[in-house]
Length: 276
Image (cartoon, rainbow, N blue to C red; front, side, top):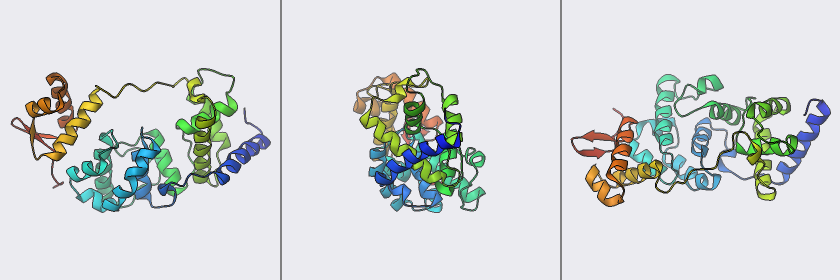
C-alpha cells in the first residue's frame, strides 16, 4: 500500500516520467472548453478512443456550443452520432445542452454533484468532467486507471474490489494538477494493456463483453439508421429490410418510442423534429 509520502512521490514520479515521454495527442486534451470536454466524455462512455477520434472533431464543428446543439433537431444529432453506438448518449447530450441553456445560462456546472443531476452523467462522468474541464480534484476510476493500480499495488491478488482501489487513488491524487495526473494515469494504463497481460482480469468487476451480433442493441441501431434515411417507416418495412424476427423489431421499436428516439403516428414511425 502507498501510505508514506515517499511512496506516493515515487509512484507519481514513475507515472509522470512515462507520460511526459509518451503523451497521447488527443484533441479534447488540447482544450479547456467545458462544452467540448463534455462532448468527449459522453462519446468516450463504453467506446474506444479510436472510434471517438473519427467523430469528435466533426461533431463539434457541426455543433460548436451548447446553444447550437440545444436548438438543432434530434435527427441532425443522430446523423452526426452515427457510428458511435449507444445512441442513448446522443439524446442525453442534446438534453444536457437544453438544460444548460435553460437552467445554467449556457455555462456547465463545475461541481460533480451538480453535474451528476444531468441525464447520461453518472458517478464517473461527473467526476471526470469536473477534473478535465475545471481541473478540480476528484476521485475517479475507469478501465485504464484501474489497470495501473491493479498492476502496481495488487499484482499478487485476484478479485480486487474497486473500493480497495479508490482509497489508493485518493491518497495518490495530485490535487494541484488533477487534470494532468489523470491523463498520465490513463496513458500508463494504455501502455500496460499493450505490454503486459491485462491486469483488469483480476478485478472483481471484470466482465467479458456480450456479442453485438443479433443483440437488441444491434436491432435498435439498425432501426435508427433506417429511420434516418426515411421520413417515416413501418414495422413491416423494417422487418423486411432487416431480416430480423418481427418480435425483436417490435420490442426495439417500443423501447425507442418510450425513450424519445422515435414517435409513432398510426403504423408509421419517425424521428422527432426540432424542439418547440
